[in-house]
Image 1 (cartoon, helix red, strand yellow):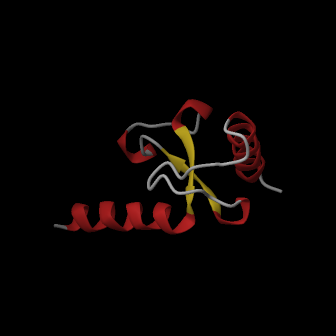
Image 2 (spheres, helix red, strand yellow):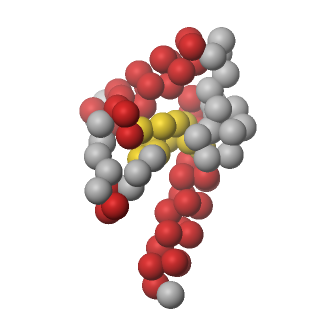
Length: 77
């Protein structure tokens, strides 16, 4: 298992414990199942963010991918 996979699992479990089993998506607010959870950089690395725990949040894979697609489209125009 990769280091980021272990970090994703650790963050997911920590949030679940703090919020009584419900882990909300950082982007849409809906509950995220562990199988669909991805790590989201709150401040993107491209904008000076880091992979430090303080800059990581859980999101749905679709929400995460959608955010990056919008950012890429905005960069092109």
